[in-house]
Image 1: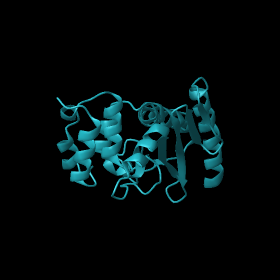
Image 2 (image 1 turned 90 degrees about the vertical axis):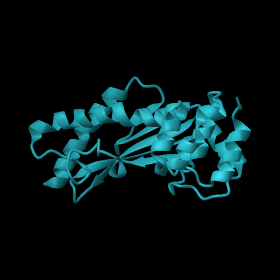
Image 3 (image 1 turned 90 degrees about the horizontal axis):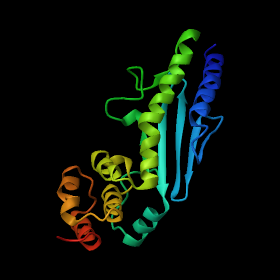
Image 4 (image 1 turned 60 degrees about the horizontal axis):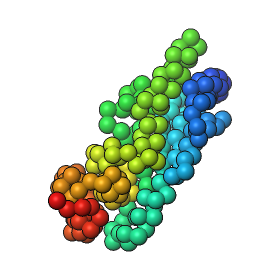
Length: 207
């Protein structure tokens, strides 16, 4: 019974997501409920992962920016990446603060038990994806300034949080004082304080 309910739910959810994202350039919603984003700067993906015991879902998203990747390679960073995902940015809603995506205490978005609740649940998932999770991935692909703050507040979601924030700051023409490396050190976003400090000073303008 649960398997049939899952399939029925996913069919409706797929339709809702495709309807919401049909006019968004570079975005594809696949049958397996993964959302692919392709841009000239890089690519990203958001996946709805079903967990049988929870009869519900969590989200995993990742993004990689081509020029950021080149910068990371050129830096020859002496320490290991924070995230082991092999992506520049990767998050899971299972580890997010506040459990924004989940609708249950087990950290998942549970499939509703009654058919009349399915439409509302699908809309709720789509709203959360559109408002909270796709914007994060798109921000990385655009190198928006808020990515620097995200790398500081959620360093575990980035392979090299401080280096990522530094590159964003460099692209936006920020100064060393604007960057305020001490905030990243306090947030444990630096892998090697001395190395990172020298890198910041070498790449950002001084005042």
